[in-house]
Length: 355
Ligand SMILES: NC(=O)c1ccc[n+]([C@@H]2O[C@H](COP(=O)([O-])OP(=O)(O)OC[C@H]3O[C@@H](n4cnc5c(N)ncnc54)[C@H](O)[C@@H]3O)[C@@H](O)[C@H]2O)c1
Image (cartoon, rainbow, N blue to C red; front, side, top):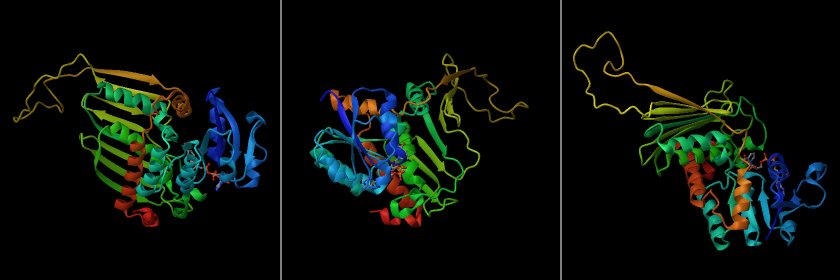
C-alpha cells in the first residue's frame, strides 16, 4: 500500500474536520476515497477543496463493501464508536476511532479484543496528546529542569455556554466529562507517568441545557507520589491558566491562550545547601534568612497547532510499521478512570454507564 485511501463516516463538525485536517497537512500519503453519513443533507454541498474524486455512502455497511477503502475514520456520535470500530476492523480495514473511544471498560475491552484479532489496524484519536503546550511541558518536566515533579494542575475552560446539542444529553453519553475528559485525563496520565492509585472526583451540572455535566474536578494520585488536579468546565466566564506543573526546583505554566509556555526554576548551578530550621526567634523577616536563591526564567513560543500530527503518526504506522504513539493500554486507562470518576462522583445521570 503506497497511499492510504481513507473514508470518513459522520460528516458533522468533526468528521468534516477529519477531511479538512488531512488535506491541511498536505500529506500526500492520504487520498480521500469516500465519505459516509446517514443524513442525506450531510452528503450535499461538500467543500470544493475535497475535489470530486470520492464516493458517497449513506451507511457503514455500504461503505465497508468498497474494496478501495483502506482506512475508515469514525466521527459519529460517542456511542457508535465501538460498534462501528468493530465492524470496520472485521471488514479488514484500518480504523481511526474518535474519542471518547468507549463508554465503559467492558465495551473498550471488546474493541481491543477485536483489534488484537486484526493487528495493526486500530488507531485511537487522542489528538490532544500532540497539543504544543502539553508536548513541551511534558518534555521539560521529564528533563528534570524543575526537579521532582510533585503537582500537575490542568484547568481547561471551554467558555461559558448554555450548550444545547446531543453532547449535553446523558442518553447519548453526553456531557463535558465524556467530551473533554478523554483529552485531559490522557494528558494527566502522561504527566503523572506512573499508575494511578487514588481517585477523587466531583462531577456536576451547572448551565448546559441537557442534563449532562459541565463542570468537574478530578484528583489523581499516582504511585510515584505525583498528584494531578484536573478541572474542566463549560461554565467559567473567566478562564485562567491551562496548565501548571510544580516541581522541587521550579514551575512550568501555560497561560490560557496556549501560545507560550513559561518556566521559572532555581538556577541549575545552585546546589541546595544542607540547612537546618531555626527554633529560636527569627529576624524580622519571613522566608529563608540563610540563603538567597537565583532563578532562571525561560519562555517558549509554541507552534499554533500540532494536533494534526495524529494523522502523520497514523500514516507512519500503516505504511511503515512505525509504532503509533497512543497505546491501547493508555486509552483503556483513560476509559477506566472516566468510569471510576462517574462512580465516585455519584453523578446520577451517568450511573447507567458504570459496570
Ligand atoms: N478529537 C477531537 O478533538 C474531537 C473534537 C470534536 C468532536 N470529536 C468527536 O467526534 C464525534 C462527532 O462529534 P461531532 O461534533 O462531529 O458530532 P455531529 O453531531 O456534529 O456529527 C455527527 C455526524 O454523524 C452522522 N451520523 C450519525 N449516525 C450515523 C450513522 N449511523 N451512520 C453515518 N453517519 C451517522 C450525523 O448525521 C452527523 O453528521 C464525537 O464523538 C466527538 O466526541 C472529537
